[in-house]
Amino acid sequence: MKQVIETRHLRDARQMALSIRDSLDTGPIGQIVGEPGTGKTWAGKWLAQKLDGVRVCCSHGITSRALALKISVALDEPNLSGSTSALVARLEKRASGRLLIVDEANQLRWQQLELLRYLADEAGMGLLLAGTELMDRPFSDGRTATLLAQLASRIGAKRVRFERLTALEEITGYMLQPHFGKVDKATAQAFARHAKGYWRDGAELAAACRRVMQAQQLDTLNAVVVDAAANWMAPARHNA
Image 1 (tube, helix red, strand yellow):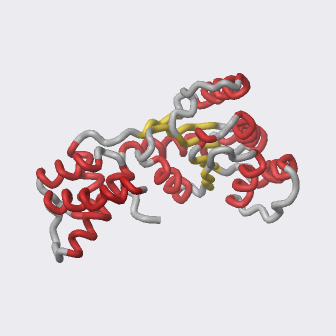
Image 2 (image 1 turned 30 degrees about the horizontal axis):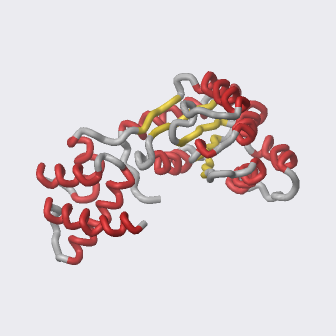
């Protein structure tokens, strides 16, 4: 995977994931929350790679069988046939002692959350849920609300919040210097103004800056390049 910069959020997430992995006999559950674009997906991929875990990503309306299939594939289960119950029965052995990272967990309904809780409890699997404010959103389905309350009590302090970077020093140190080396304050301020501290926007802007620099045969990033790259990105975002 691409280079990942270890921010304080990522370090906190790693410590939390390690605490989950080190107490698998209790079926531990952790959570990464944050706004879209703050780096949760990158964190999940990095944690899965570094800690020998597996990661699945959920989509809106995903069924329990589809989720069980995703987990089975991630864990290299060869037998993908049968009902949801059959898949889960095989996963009880396959998932034992493993760390499962579930991205976009805010897309799940109570049936899928119950499936994950069952695997954590019965298989001794570590579970890390990543997404937007999964535990804080209102639910019309009382069963979902009840299960989320139970999960919240299980998570406890094992919760890391990813936020956009607001300090210019952090944006410079994490988003700019690893890719462009030392930059002046005006350049950093221009980058911060356009990226607004979001990892996704910062990554897209950095890539656009590199294209502008290549086209103009420049070796050093400056504020003019940043503004030009941001202007080049604007129509693409508008039409996306």
